Length: 127
Image (tube, rainbow, N blue to C red; front, side, top):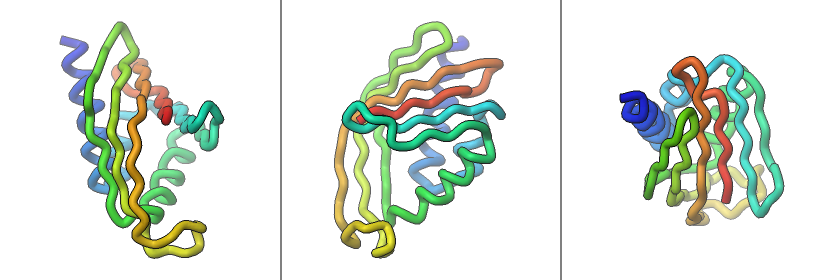
């Protein structure tokens, strides 16, 4: 039963992400949430705590005109879930981010969700 609850929490988080809903993304996060994004083996983003996470989530919303994470597979063991994700996105029209407007991004990655006290306490995205 706990496994199903954790899967529901992850699916709700991803649905909120896809809908640019920062409050929905934060709903099931622990106050001490640690978020890391690792690309090509390098940590390129790290937040600690709910306030940092929400600030980053709001900033990230501005980078994309459209974005979608699609769950390919979820493996849950004890308090950890490994999620295979396909990501697609279209960059916003903001030249300040150094990218071409409307450039499409597509990648596959893994997200690790760690739970504590019924909430997500850590998310590690790897691509």
